[in-house]
Amino acid sequence: MSRPAALETRTEPVPSKPVRFVTATSLFDGHDAAINLIRRLLLAHGAEVVHLGHNRSVAELVQTGLSEDAQAIAVSSYQGGHMEYFKYLIDELARERASDIAVVVGGGGTI
Image (cartoon, rainbow, N blue to C red; front, side, top):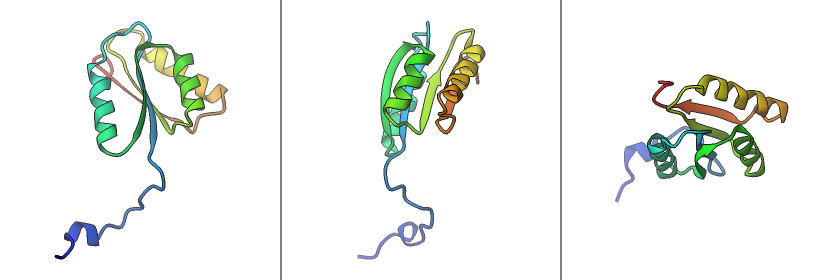
């Protein structure tokens, strides 16, 4: 049986280890449907996910990102204050010399 053409012509590099994400919703936010969907999609595509759930502080995200050696932090927010929260997250990662951790954000009020 021959291999599918897509497998024979694949040229992109295969990561030696899965990408690790920390996922959560922002502080004072219990709207977790979007981040739960993102978490499931990440897992389905081979990523490792450390899911903190809803109502999480910047300090919790940064500390978990550092301790879990994450490559990215994904946060969903559906309420006001998200721009300040996201800026604070990026600033705190920089303060910890962890600007190499990517930040992915979205939600009802941020799309």
